[in-house]
Amino acid sequence: MKTHLILTCALGIFIALGSTAISAQEPFEQAAFAISPSQVETNRHAPKDYDAKFKQNDMAIVYMIGFQKVRVAAKSGNIYKVVYANNNVAYFRANAVYPYFDANKYENLVRDNDEVLSPFLDCYAKKHNIYPELVGDFGWRHDGMTVEEIKERLQLGTAKMVQLERDLKSQFPVRPNTYHQIERNPAILDEIVTNREEYEQCVIDRKESSKFDDSVWLMAHRDDIKKALKAVNEYDPATKISMRSDMNVALYAVSPKARNAWLKSASALDFKDAIDKLLQPLADALAKKLPTYFPQMDKYPSGTAADFALLKRALKNPARYKIFKSGLMQSAWQIDKNSLGIPNARYKNGVIYLRDTEADHPYCHATYVNIIQNYSGGGTYAASRSALVAEELVGCPAGAK
Image 1 (cartoon, rainbow, N blue to C red):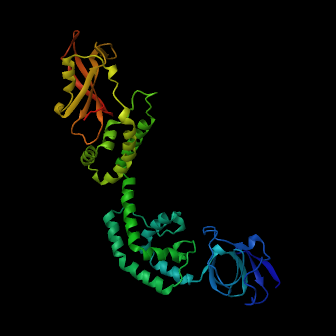
Image 2: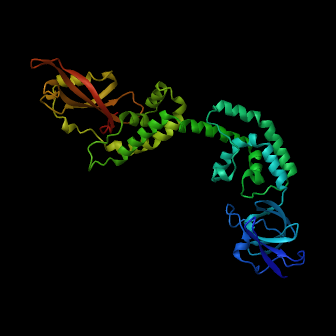
Image 3: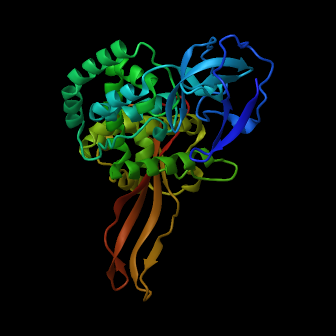
């Protein structure tokens, strides 16, 4: 049959026009169509292998600016030849031809219910790992809403959603995935109304999650945890003498008791699950490094019994701790002076290697304590006092309990 090509300027596409109506006797499976690639429409969002497996004279629907009803006339490979109501002919890849449904009626159904549907679109996109704009956007914003307000909104929409499911399934027995937005894609609406409870829970969970994502408090501690994890992972005894991991963060990672006390004091128990997940990699890293990470007691060889007793005074409850060893780095006083060269104080650096007998984790502590004498003037110093400087988690001695 002889055909002519014309350019339809308004649409910017080629359409092959038949001089007479297409015969139903035309072979359905054809070796090739006498057309150029530019004449074949496709849906770039649809899988390349999508094919509804039409038979000759099946009614279908295609999208060109808007949906249009067509009759399937023939097929060659993955290209369908379709015929419009006015006998115009066009060619579409199989991924752009769908089982027929009343597109205008369906779009009106969606638009009439856009408010009740809008909360679920992001969840559909997330579940199917596609961009939200490919699903649709009816202006749903929950930034200023609490979880309870969202639950109330969803509950108020329950009756409409139930009715919407009835209308969809009674009026549209065929609900194909056209890989367009929801107002042109019955499969999206079908999944949402069929799995309404799942999608309602998703909306609630996403709000709960966004509460954490928007928290300045959580963001700050997330950064602290990342720094601590980096320090632990980078520690190599061949090149570094200290792990330099934040003691508090490390303790929260290995001690549920300390972690809960911290969250309670910070009025942040709502963030417990999020903090648990953030701290788990740090706990795992510490479990690998700490068993062979010990305080360098050989660098603290000095001290008398009186010095050791003074070091212990820095502990709030000395009876709580099992002390393995303690010592001072210097036997002579170190002088701290101001900018004029006048002494502020003198000090000696010390450390106590201990285990907290009430701890709920298997590690020990290196507790760094300075013995200090404040300057009194005239070359004299006040009585010695001890001051806690820092702590770090370390491995325990062999056989320690």
